[in-house]
Image (cartoon, rainbow, N blue to C red; front, top):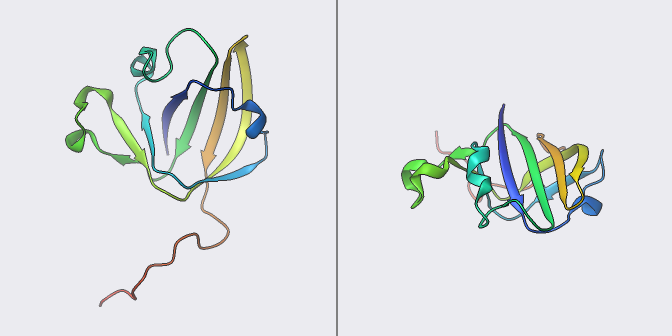
Length: 117
């Protein structure tokens, strides 16, 4: 497992109650570096924000493929299945949500072909 971070300029706390299981269908860009999130582009220090702390089991390191090589970017693939573990509201406009990636209980994406031996 690896902890990665994702910041958004929204309050998503009501959409992520503890115990909820959620599938992220979009590819999601994350980082292993909290200092990257200090940029207003990602999370910043003011305004309404949500910071996801994600325990991932198969995030892809894409540093060598990214235009931003210093951002320690990790890509979560489409169909990432997550469980909401907890929430924290350390400041009036900052919501921290702890997610843990799980193996889904059902197949989310079927391979189009059988594997070739």
